[in-house]
Amino acid sequence: MDNKAYTYDGSVIFHYTNLDGMESIIRNRELWATHIEDLADETEFYYGRDLTVSTMQAASAAEDFAGNQGVIAKWAEATQELPNIGRLIIKMGYEPEEYDKLIDWHVVCFSHREDALPLWRGFGNGCKGYSLGFRYLGTVYDFPGFELPLQRVEYDADRQHDQALEIIRSAIRQTSAPGSNAFSWTIPLGRALYFKDPMFDSEAEWRHISIPKSPEAIRERSLVDCNRKIRYSLLPFEGNYELTRIVCGPLAEHRADKPEGMEYLLRLLSANGYDTSAISIKQSQIRLWR
Image (spheres, helix red, strand yellow):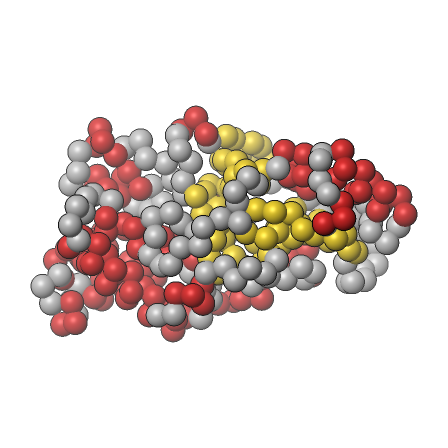
């Protein structure tokens, strides 16, 4: 598997949000990482998990994995506990007091597409929002890595299957390495978080997945429009991201093609210590009737 095909290549990636989100991100220099079970599509994480489980179940009876079939079958059963890492490890027979406080995965979603109508509609507040362009400054890890990096989402079913097999092979290597522990076989599982149903390939998504350092780092907020609460943690810009572009949605309140809109955005950036000459501000080229 060509790991470099999935690691960040230095290009600008875009995070779609509404007006309040845009203002909060700029003022606080933080992105909100949403608990992976609380994403807009509550089922999308389970696609990658279930694909990995089914691949493990098939591998547990395959001759290619002779000698490891029993442990792979246990991995398949335990992997069904994701995204709760603690429950997963406990299911493998480790002591609860050591692992039951482990925190679940949180994710920030980006796209390579800066001005895409489906993304404006789905994530840009019905075309009234903003697309913020960033360059990633963090460490780029080759697969597998426990520090889950910014990686490109995989939509192709054949490549997903190949990568799921590589997850199993990597887990075997991890557990046989000197100094391996209860976490070792779970390290390659991170790649499964970047599998997504092929029907969504137009999103061209990238994901930054992190694990909060403590339960106290997890916050909760209510979404009035859908009457539910979501869990999230904060991902600071420092050492991670640099804001380089703002794209105003087709129906945004503050538009880059209007003098008052451009003035507002420049004032917002300047008031919060940004070098406005280093950030381009653009208006969406999509035309919609109000």
